[in-house]
Image 1 (cartoon, rainbow, N blue to C red):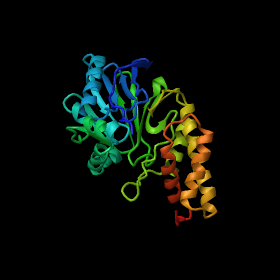
Image 2: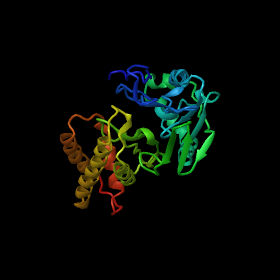
Image 3: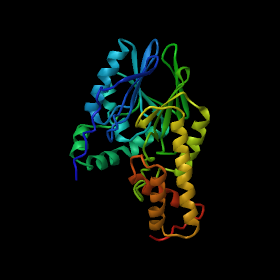
Image 4: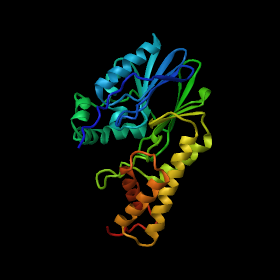
Length: 301
């Protein structure tokens, strides 16, 4: 098996997507997120840290140069390692703020995810060396408006979807929305469905979140991974989740075995989305939606 690419944040093709809003792109490297730096007159907000302290040092140095003396804030869209496991690096430099459910995820599930991801291979383990899980400075419940000076950024907890503690970051004056892993471009939705250890992801709640977000029609959408786009990225994920639910449940209604459901739905969705990456997540999505079927008993595999 080929060695995994190093999940390293590189300051390559950094793009200003709107006035004083830049994105460090993930370059389609697995376990590297898109990272945002949002500026106002008085302060700058960083969205995501990269995986581990070394990546976070790269992000912090870049953000400090962009800030040029302005106050620094940090937020993360959810607790997963490539998004939040570098927050310790910002401890003396920035105010870290996240929603309450994400803070609970980080505290309760973070250690298990650190152990799990460290076991994914040497490339990941190298980036996770020296990680300790940071505590946020500010915790909010459902929404928080951060005034950067002449620009207000809205942080909104979406409720359980990809994880228990997902949040989106909206810059209303620029029409920009950072979604974290609620949205990936050119990739099947990432379902962290690992029963019995982790079953927080909810396909039904995720679909409801995407239906709400799609109705807002932001001008620019920054996904967790993949290319920046427009509101069509929200519609793509919404439509995919609908199709995944419907095709899974049609077969579940007929008492088909879950193994067969997975085979049939996987083949169909790959045909419908032939250019998308992450085909391995289809199986996890089917498993999650089988468990969320109105009839709770699951056909044996």
